Length: 226
Picture 1 (tube, helix red, strand yellow):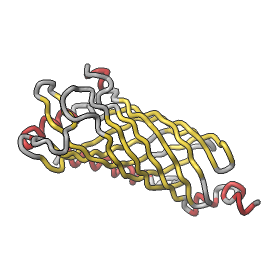
Picture 2 (cartoon, helix red, strand yellow):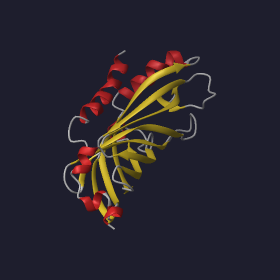
Picture 3 (cartoon, helix red, strand yellow):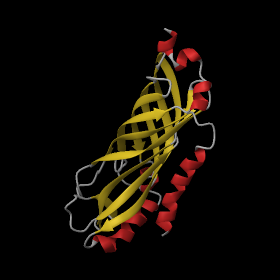
Picture 4 (tube, helix red, strand yellow):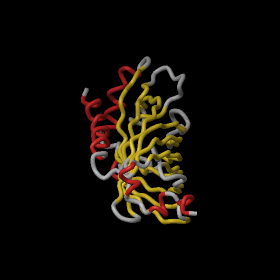
């Protein structure tokens, strides 16, 4: 029950941000590579994800762009290494975990053309995990797996880049690549590459009318000006 309550915190945080100065909101989807540095467990998985994102302007070029994404993966408990490892889908003693990834990156954007920008981003990121189902010995290993992740192994440092195309006054399309560095490995003593993640995704965004009115006409509808 406690783990489920903890997982609700990022959802409430994300929803609360929408009350303040919303510039755009959207749907994001992509794939997430998660590094398994151990010889045990499954090969490093590539997980599809789906989520929501928003953008809040701090200045002409600076933004806060929180996102909340969901994916899932199977995990096993390695008693030899005393750590949770990704498991094959057919593994008999695994636990299926829902992963909730929350970040709020600071983003700097620079115009390439009137309606095309590139940018960089940086942020702390957090991964909260909820058990969905377990099989075999996974039922008894579930507490060890959750204790492993919630023992500080949910804190990451995110860095990446993006390209954004404002193809109309109401919509934009953004391609983003970022890396989630498991900084807890610094004090945990484990392999620094374990649980290192790389995300590649696309975001389709909607610009509310209130934000459209604040933009210069030439930027809102360049085709009309032409």
